[in-house]
Amino acid sequence: MARPKMLKLPEVLEEIEMSRAAFYRMRARGKAPKLIKLPNGQLRCRRTDLDAWWSSIEEAAA
Image 1 (spheres, rainbow, N blue to C red):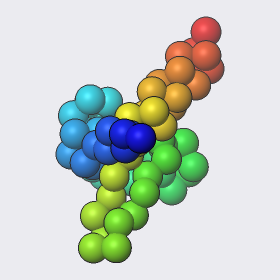
Image 2: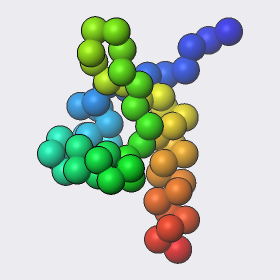
Image 3: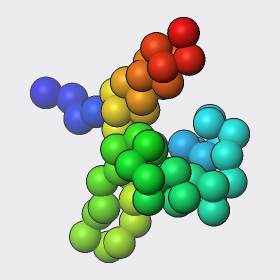
Image 4: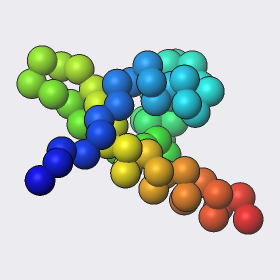
C-alpha cells in the first residue's frame, strides 16, 4: 500500500499563498488544514487533507 503524499509546511504555504504568520493565526482559530507533527518536530500535511480543506473553503464561499 502506497503512503499518502505528505507536503512540507513551506509547500502548503506556497500553494495556499499565505504567510507563515497568517497560517498560524488561522491554525489557532481552528480554520487551517490538518497538520501532522513528526517526531523531529517538523509539520506535514497530507495531500488528501489539504484537498479536503480546499473543498470546505469553496463550499463555505458558495
